[in-house]
Length: 95
Image 1 (tube, rainbow, N blue to C red):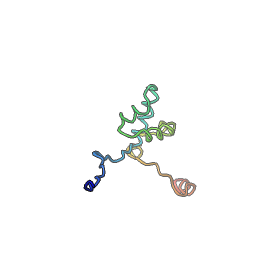
Image 2 (cartoon, rainbow, N blue to C red):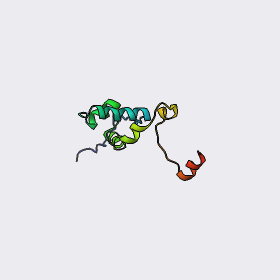
Image 3 (cartoon, rainbow, N blue to C red):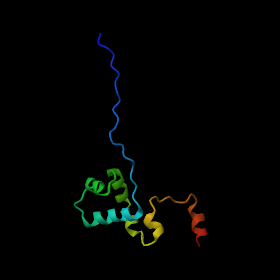
Image 4 (cartoon, helix red, strand yellow):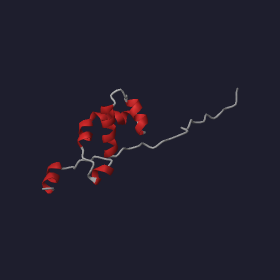
């Protein structure tokens, strides 16, 4: 019988952390796609350093990202768009 060889697990050589784009970068991505329609999602993913599914998700909401006014510093650096749990109460509080 051959000697038992322990199988080694293959470890990914380069594990990268998931990138997240700021609102300004998402707006730039949508505008880039609008101005360069020949660019596909794979090319955009490489250009912005994110995955193809992230590009797809951003482009699905392109109207939202293009309409955002990034001159407001709060929106420029923000990366997540988390809605309020009770949006009606939040809207009343801001009045």
